[in-house]
Amino acid sequence: MEIITADFFQRALAGGLLIGLTAPLIGIFLVLRRLSMIGDTLAHVTIAGVALGFLTGVYPIGMGIIFAVFASFAIEKLRKAYKGYAELSIAVIMAGGVALASLFFTLGMGYNNDVVGYLFGSIYTLDMTDLYVVGAVTVLVAVTVFIFFKELFLLSFEEDAAAVSGLPVKLLNMIITVMTALVISTAIKIVGALLVSALLTIPAACSLIIARSFKQSVVFSVIIAEIAVVAGLVIAGVWNLAPGATIVLLLIAMLILTLVGKRGFTT
Image 1 (cartoon, one colour):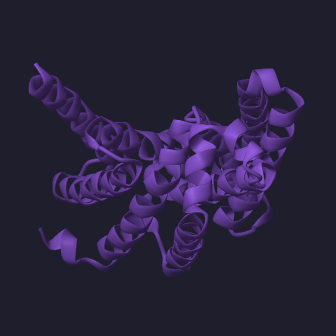
Image 2 (cartoon, one colour):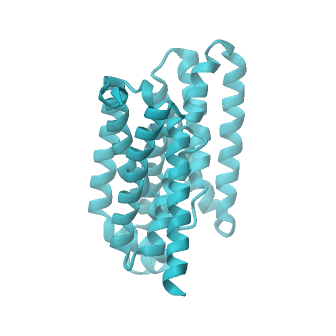
C-alpha cells in the first residue's frame, strides 16, 4: 500500500479525478446526441498529434490538443456538408487520423515506445505540466457547461427545436465538439487513446438507466466515473495492473451491475 502515498501516484490520482469530472460531463451530451463514436475519432487524431510532437520535439499533449481541435472543426464542417449522413464525418476524420499517426510512426521509429504509452495510457508518468494542462481544461469545460447548460440540454434532445427557438445551434455544436476535443486530448495519457471513449460513454450509459432527470444523469455519470477512477487506480497500484484498463473494466462491471439491478427492480 506504500504506492498510494508515492508522489507519482498522487499526481496520477489528481489527474484521474480531473478527467473523471470532465469526460462524463461532456460524454452525457455526446451520448444523447448519438455521437458516442466521436471519442474514438478524436483520440486517433490526437495520437497523430502526439506522434508529431515526439518527432518535432514539441510538447506531445500540446500538439495533440492542436490536432484534436482542428479535427473538431473539420467534423462540424463535414456534418453540415452531409446533413443526412452525419456519421460520415466521423469516419472520414478517423481515417485521416489513423493515416497520419501511421505516417508519423514510420518517420520516427525511435520514439514509438513512448507513443504506445498514449495508446494504452501512462497515468503514472504524469508530471506537473500535464496536471496544469488537465486542470485548465477541467476549469474551462466545467465553466462552459455551467454557462450553457440549458442550451446544451435542449440541443441534445432536439436540435431542430433549439434552432427554431432562436438558439445559436452552429455555435453550440462547435462548443461541444471543441470541448470534446480538449477532454480527449488531455485524457489519452491517463486512460489511453484506445480506451478514452469508455470514460466518455459508459458513465453516461449507467446514469441514464438509474437517473430520473437530466440533471441527475449528469451528476450520477460524474460520480460513477470518479468511483471507477479512484478504485481503478488503487487496485492497479496495489496489484501492479494496467491502470487505464482497470478503470475501464470497472466501468463495464458497474454498467453490468446497473443493468442487472434495474432489471431485478422492475421484475
